[in-house]
Image (tube, rainbow, N blue to C red; front, side, top):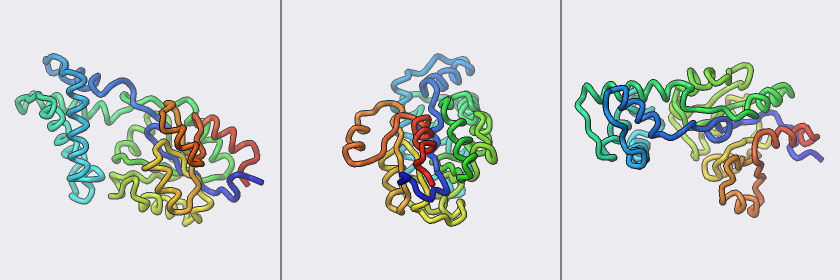
Length: 252
């Protein structure tokens, strides 16, 4: 008996599942400050400042300002400005513009990201079996248009459709983002769809609430993973092990 009968679609989280951040946030803020002729800001203060600023912006203007029709660059400029302020740094307008433009450009490229080596083989293997692949991510349009292609993840060869919160106006853990994915997959019944992600709250729970099947990855060996396993969650260390699972007669 197969573990995933009548599997027609696999949806996959992006950050933490297919790719990860490279280096520290402070690295990019430091490079931007140096390019403007200023000393590096303190890494810890900047990191804490960013967490506070990002949380505030996500509450006030969720999905990168989608409902407010806020331009992406304005959302991020406000966030980065507040990050520096909360970290105790204030610059004149001209200086900050130089710093921000460099940061915005960096995070709109593939530079701060690293693709896990098993990501492309996994996605291609799944599509070769005739299974539709969708990406579901709390991310803005640059992931789809710039970052993923620059990392070698192309629509039509590695994935079939994407659902990105900044473009849809709904974000994980809201189950509606998964409902959109089911529609994009061709209104596939949820029981015929497997979702793979790295967050119990944002990936596993909302997918399961709709009747989808779900697997969690534990690439970084976090303590919570043991609890997930005890609760009956299917947890695997990487996509290579999931690929092995799917090729050993566990789909039909």
